[in-house]
Amino acid sequence: MLTGKTALITGAMGGIGGAIAEALGKQGCRLMMNDIGDAAAHQRRADDLARRFGVDISYCNADISDRAQIDRLVDETRARIGPVDILVNNAVKRHFHSITDFPLDEWDQSMAVNVTAPFALTRLVLGGMQERGFGRIINISSMLGLGGRAGRVDYITGKTALLGLTRATAAETLTDRNVTCNAICPGSVLTPIIEKRIQGLADERQISWQEMSVRYRANLNQIGDFITPDQIASAIVYLCSDAAAAITGASLPVDAGVSAAFVQGPAM
Image (tube, rainbow, N blue to C red; front, side):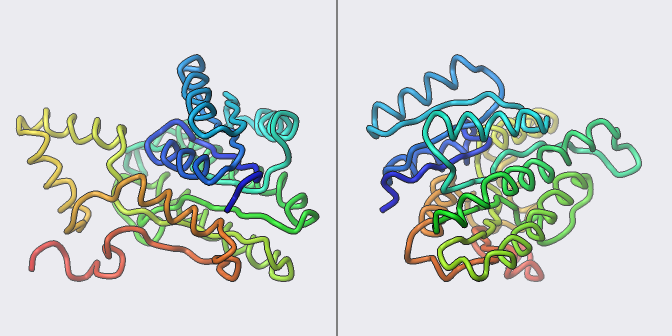
């Protein structure tokens, strides 16, 4: 369905990003997987996916908090596997502080990764999508882009901004019939980062991981189980398909109904 398309995914080595790469690779996409961290391990991961799916897959360690490296990421994608047809803005930086205690350097870092980078990448690839007559931009927002929560100001601000970027991009491409921009708003997804956070909270309270995970979900009004990365990835594959060509500017919750039923709460 997407054979021969080139997809650029930021934050591509984490739980959600890795699932997105798997799903698009299975559809025949060429992939540029962007992430920071252990470059050797990330390259092995990209090589493994390339062998399994028989498609061109590259890895780039560009730090997208740096605008010059954003330019490098797009240039390397174009040079290695072709111009970007699908952009998935998935990378995120998050901190846990109250507003009055929030270090300004951490705020600047979060805004650079969570807001400026998605805009800059969209700016660099959108014109080519319009010229070629096909493009899909997917911004990974959150159910916390739809509401507020104490201690999460950088994450909430960034995820809310992505909804605005999604609508603005859709508005500028209304006459480009096969270029769309949409946002996914996941509920609580059980990624390695969340698993580690739950374990830390469990250790503080001297309870089991399982008990803490139930409390964690209840605290978010997530009455059902965690969302899986594969569920997010499947929604993205659909939005990239021809069947979804008329869907643009949308903010799609994938949260097991949390955002729709927030006034109900976990108690029945």
